[in-house]
Image (tube, rainbow, N blue to C red; front, side):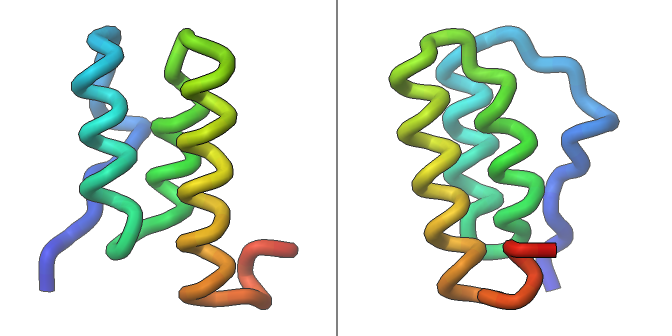
Length: 67
């Protein structure tokens, strides 16, 4: 099983790299995807990626999203 990247271990300041971390974590760890999305500097892109990750999380585990 592929392990999700831990948002607390890496320091990434490159916007495209952060977007890629959001993308690769969408299926395996939506929580990590949301954590990475919050680090995007561009407000509109940050919101879009956070919503995208939230939708992925809700589809995967509806009960956990509200916790």
